[in-house]
Length: 296
Ligand SMILES: Nc1nc2c(c(=O)[nH]1)N[C@@H](CN(C=O)c1ccc(C(=O)N[C@@H](CCC(=O)O)C(=O)O)cc1)CN2
Image: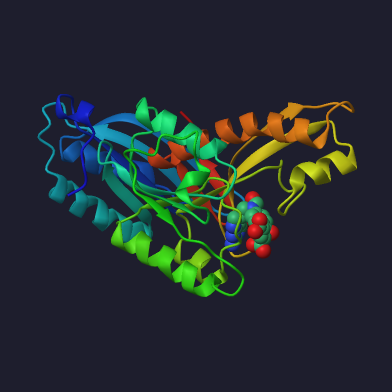
């Protein structure tokens, strides 16, 4: 049974309902009537009608004033509507914490930042595992006391075996979301497919510029005046996945590659933590090769 976050025990239970389907009249009316008929109360509602793809997207947060929502009945009602409209949908208790696996290589600034934000309650999640292709001693500056750490080294020769161990761990730990927090190994097509739509990477450039392993050196060589970072879902195609969040900062001709790496760490930290916070709160929906983000 997934852990319910502490705060929820005392307050009104909230549910996050997300949906996407081909756009047509009557979707919102059907959904809101179903929620109303089951005594539900809509607390938040955001929607987007993508006229280009003809797809409709919505995120609704609902509760029941007396916490007496008959969830199975509501679920059945929404399932019937989903059948009518051909929806892809989710309904989840907002306090039911998602289980997150954090993957990291040599650079630990994003891992440190996520663990800190988790400890102060900014990222409501359960940490299923921290996985690295470097040994635990690499992370002297990070407090790993209360998180399960797994050292899974990898070489070109052992990649398939190592990825099998990663996938086994994802299953054994009931991981919902995998975060590549500067994990510097390219996932195979097979593993990327298995983690489709639930694996988030932080790329240290403002995509689509400077793909690959050394974007800051590429940026310095090109002489750009702005650098950035991009959080995106991982696909088999390197650095091509649907973008969730981006941010940038100005630089100048004075900035050395090391200056860019230092400045970039701050951008990476805030971009990845924002993307993860939105993922945990059901605010990110995939729209083909893009995303719909119902920001907070
Ligand atoms: N299937 C995917 N896997 C990964 C992605 C992705 O988009 N799709 N993103 C990367 C992260 N990344 C850039 O953000 C990145 C990581 C690593 C490399 C790379 O060329 N790695 C070399 C090895 C480098 C090393 O050992 O230090 C390699 O794998 O041969 C490029 C980009 C994470 N995985």
